[in-house]
Image 1: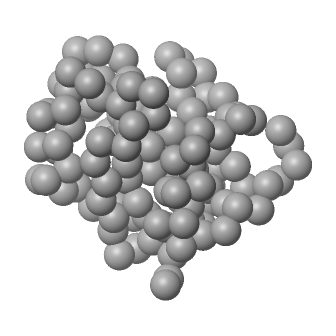
Image 2 (image 1 turned 45 degrees about the vertical axis):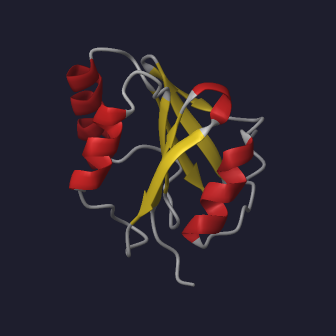
Image 3 (image 1 turned 120 degrees about the horizontal axis):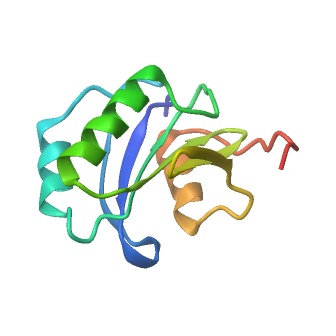
Amino acid sequence: MSPHEVCMLIGHDGEVLWCDESNSPARMPDSRSRWQAIWRLRDVLEEVAHSHPDGPLGFSTEDESTMSALTSALGKPLRFSVVAPEGMVSRQGDRDVLVVDEPWWAAALRSASGIRHTPSGLA
């Protein structure tokens, strides 16, 4: 399987509510079904996580605009996360935080993305 971006919508207690994937390791085009799932799940949605199979361990410019649009549309703060081969980072409020104790679904997200976890040793 070639690496590709995967998106997961996460609810309370780390429950995976919905998942979809792209066919690219560097891009996840907008999806009507993803936006509909976000809206349908808005009352229980707590986190939007996606993979960056080829890096970076951080948010892209496109990620930034999507996070802003989601926060504005939903009228509530969400946690946003990127899972990359070398680790996981989450946006908590206005700060990006390296996640040391990754949730159970981070390994599932890496596996679905076709990437291996290669910790950078920065944590």
